[in-house]
Image (cartoon, rainbow, N blue to C red; front, side):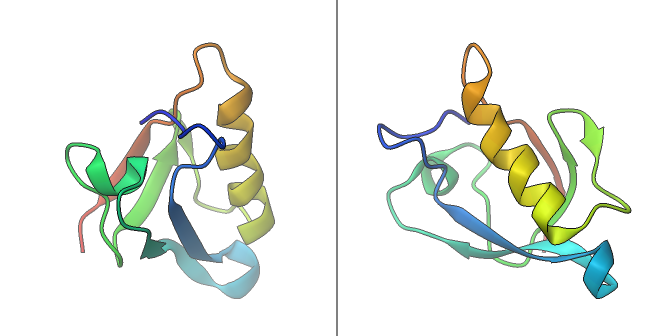
Length: 85
């Protein structure tokens, strides 16, 4: 998915290795790239990979930084591999 005009993808995550929890989508804002991408991202989906990088063992902050760093790619694009809820 590509970020919106403000550089946002429109979803939040929770969990991480620092919390001994998987990375889960905690919120998807309406009418955002995360809401309108195909397949749609859903609350409760488990994030397995970000742009081809396995997120197992990463802390919450590391995952957030990976997501934000994808805005700096050319072209700016975020590829998620998820396990649907």
